[in-house]
Length: 210
Image (cartoon, rainbow, N blue to C red; front, side, top):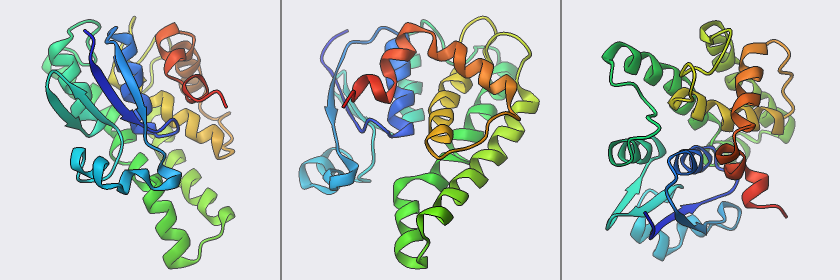
């Protein structure tokens, strides 16, 4: 399918996971960068698309979709292969629980607007902001390391939504100088994911090589 437009920011974890799924499913799209550092998400033309002023936003099939997991759910319904969640209710529930540890319980606490609030309202310096980020990623990774398989992906032989959500969070962990040696299973899964060509094309350094 062609004609899709993804409004994203290269370092956004939410946009990163949507890029991964678009690539895994072979959905052609045009990228439209929204520079969060310059406040482009607050411009009237972008707010007309996404009143929340967040990324990503996906224009596809005559629709305007927001919220990364909702976008991925739409893509899963309209582009069946590869599936991001199982049709089996028990496996689906487990995958969603694993993914939400990252996408709901962790990433929002480390979102740019939250970090800016820490700086502006509470006077947090960069060292304190980094400790804040590390604190919440560590909590998530401790949970998922216990739940991670010894071999393969969270999805077994092929990636699922939990694997997709893990990769951007591992990127953030490295960006903010986390020691990851206590998470060997997550490191293995992340490496296996990033070795996949569609996932590699979605990486921040691939979409913004400067």
